[in-house]
Length: 408
Image 1 (cartoon, helix red, strand yellow):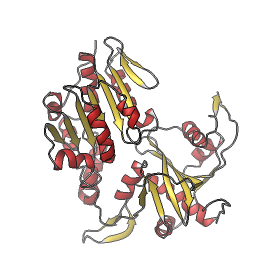
Image 2 (cartoon, helix red, strand yellow; image 1 turned 90 degrees about the horizontal axis):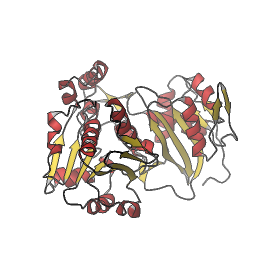
Image 3 (cartoon, one colour; image 1 turned 60 degrees about the horizontal axis):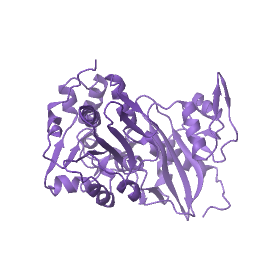
Image 4 (cartoon, one colour; image 1 turned 30 degrees about the vertical axis):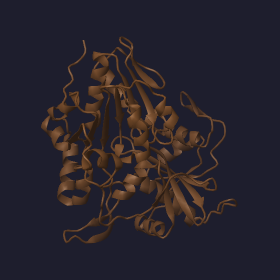
């Protein structure tokens, strides 16, 4: 027997039929993704449905809602669902979940026929071009599109379309952490984190917990956004910041281009073990994965690009190195963080449009603001996983004055 799944009353309008598009937005721990996933699984049990799960950028299923849906099926004993390498299927009635990236994927999206539901995650990054492709594709009578997001800017295209311009037949749900507290679904640790931000870091509190757009005073970096890597850009290094339970592991590639650098997001994910991290880096260099037999690790070929990781975890560095990754620890010392930040501020640094977490961190990584509303020379220890990874490798390149014959 399956378990009864509770849907908070704040999300009940999503169960109604009258709307065509719904914006569900707010801050961290507002139950957006988990509740939408539960609703869509429920629909897929009630009758045969076809649901498209989209993001602007999706390089693999790891970037999608696939794992969340799978975890909910296991947690609630929804044994009727079968998980293939690229879809989820209800074996009783044929309901199907498919997963796609929107960016530069016009023909693939247009080829999806008969969608009943489309769920667009991290919709703050979706472009107007992608909306112009997706919306006409979801044209079946009664079909619905759900956008879930935490705003980055005042006029993110999805937010402008549904909330500011008030699109006809659109539903808007603004929801935050107070709903999770109401139902007892917010851990004491997260409540303490929220209260600390509320009382000590009002700018962070507004964006992280209330979902306000990121217009931060005291922003540390102002990197430039570019659509894609130029062909002439040369990969010169890789940065790695460790994470696991509470923080994501963050990996960035750094490219030399003209007189500056371009940073490109490789990974931003919680729960990654060091063996998996090693193979992610190997995959990035198109090397065959390392294999493990009991305590022995075998690999063919070692990475040619240096990876610089946080030196506070020498054991992790050793374990990634055992996978055939050329990795060293970042040089640290007194004032190394501020000195590294200053050196990066003096450089011409860009980031790729597909690096959505780099953009979010760059917009929210700030100097501490005191009670007199003045910026202090102390970086707030938040939104800095990819920022730290980039700093490790770029300061390494500058410190050791590594020359690349073909870099431009």
